[in-house]
Image (cartoon, rainbow, N blue to C red; front, side, top):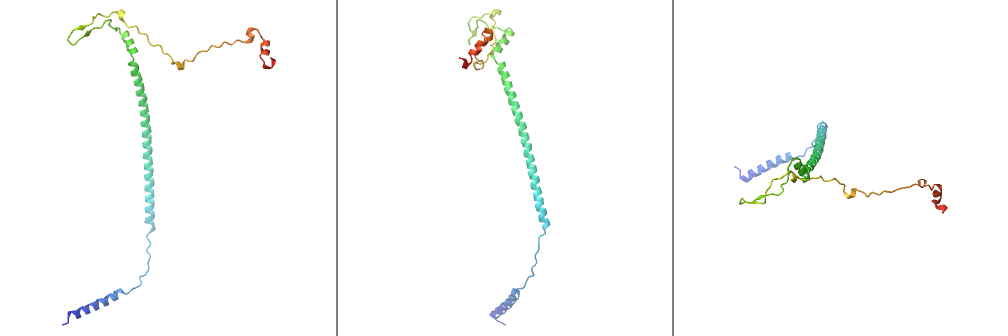
Length: 179
């Protein structure tokens, strides 16, 4: 039998021979494979179309939001105007002069000598019933313009020389060259 060293050599030599055979270079034919252009062009067109449609939809939604915002702003302005009108009406209704006038119209009078009740039940003051003579004498305030809106009135009286009887003589004397 052969020794292990001999077996190893024979095995190495057989492997090296096989490796040399495999390592020989051979010429590979050059074949260019072109990718088909149609799928790429179709992909670019689809992406462009999707982008354009997306921008159109985005722009449309922005316009709709803008119109809704304008309508809400108009409604808010109208409601603010209505609130101001109602506040002014409420101020007119709360006006003490108007309330006093309404009280007189309804026949209410101010008691001449009011009486007060203390917590212990005693009456302070001398109560007496009101009469028609105790009615309020209310005159509404006259509406006046502020002083800035009332200009000073100046009356200018103009007399003509013909009305005074002076005639042409006055006209000649009034020329600067005739003096």
